[in-house]
Image (spheres, rainbow, N blue to C red):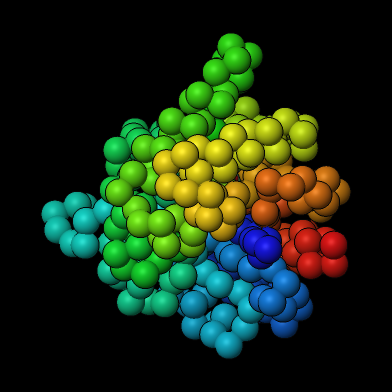
Length: 253
Ligand code: PEP
């Protein structure tokens, strides 16, 4: 039985006081982590404060990106060693905005995924097709290849702990969502890809989120699908009340 995981991706939103205010509002109200993993992926500047603020609560803090190297001459980058040292638990890796706007490649995504495990961080590895790829019938082939490349070199145990976020690019921040059935079909294909690359056991354990305009009104539909284990949520994770509603919908299912 896979535990659902809801991760908020704040992107480049909020200032520190707003971030702290959000955590203050949600930290006593999130459902128990026995039922659902609640994650907030915040801008790097806020991570130290938010980790401290969430100590002893059921909210875990994630980064939105990390470098694959431990340290070095990489101006402006964030070290996985520094993230771990702060007490950060997760890092999003290869979000489509990083791939499209900051030239991330399948190769860098793979290096970052390996590096995350080396430093005790759980990677949330993103994949997803463009509208052109979907309309051209290339979704499964493209997404399968992204996943296969991202996971290359991991052990079976590491794959079991990985979170994969399937996010069709055309559904992110657009208000458009894939239908729950279409999203599940791709998530099932991702699971088959993991089974072929690693094992049935790894495929049964890996958690696969759907992402793309998820909100309290549609989350149950996605979570009712057999291969969808949670959601990576942008816009609807910015307000405390809506983030809590997402978690409650999942926990009370
Ligand atoms: C995201 O940021 O990964 C995302 C899915 O955004 P939104 O929920 O706003 O579409």
